[in-house]
Image (cartoon, rainbow, N blue to C red):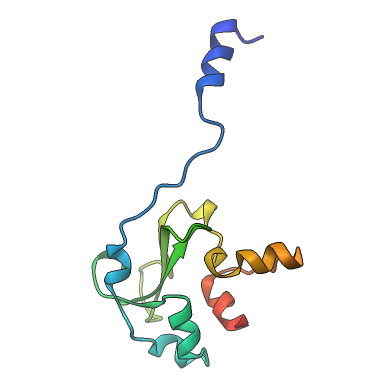
Length: 131
């Protein structure tokens, strides 16, 4: 059985890990270049609605990116898909606590509550394809 001290120590630990908000400069570094997705028949307006764009700096350079917001419209993550097929780099890169991403909760939270339904898909590309 655990000791009394170890139980007290366990109670002090936070039960839910808080999501760290990211600097909004990640969005400012996205350029409104939508070729990668418009070639796949995604509407440009849809990409604008989701605040998508082409990354130009760092690990998101040359990736088609989507910022991830929480229900309070705070930036909590970024995800980007490489725009070229033949590469050794990962297809997707993420910044933030991926397990906490709910995309696009900042746009559809009220609809989910009203309809009491959720459609789960694999990636942001799948989400914008549904639009």
